[in-house]
Length: 229
Picture 1 (tube, rainbow, N blue to C red):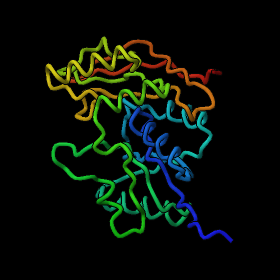
Picture 2 (picture 1 turned 60 degrees about the vertical axis):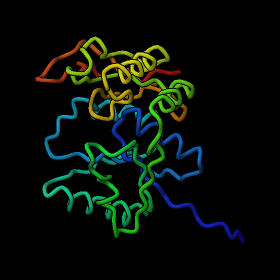
Picture 3 (picture 1 turned 30 degrees about the vertical axis):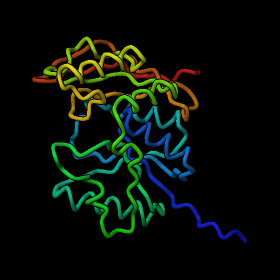
């Protein structure tokens, strides 16, 4: 009989963007047992940056169960209840997040919510250098497409661009010259991943233009279809 401990079942907190996708990839490479993907969805949330129908196509391509969990006010209590359900109903002992650093000086929200629940919080990207993270996305053949921008940081022409080597270099230049976070950690931009090493097939994002609302611009979508690699 093996003396090795049984791996804890993990859930990836999934938004469909580059951060959670890279965190999932790194966790899988480290031998973490990924049971499912979970999206916490506040009631009536519009998910303009990370549309739910695209997440459905992503998770179909990944081949893992996807659970959408409604979050209501008071949010702290609701998150704790959702995490406890994952623990009790699916045996989840760890959640993986794509968090990189504190945002505006605030500590890690999920770690606070999970305190005392017997659930570990894994943050494989925490503290990662921005150039290192962008290089990992490009070198590991992730296909991440910019789907929303903060117009004070980037104009709408960035929407639809893939984070390839050229785009990564431009973002790093903007970080140096204008203080734009090259990974969009302060909301400068959002992405959706349409292919990754753990996808069985690519996902068609089908962007049909852009729409501006206040200080932000978003991609307009056609319903996506899955494409064979």
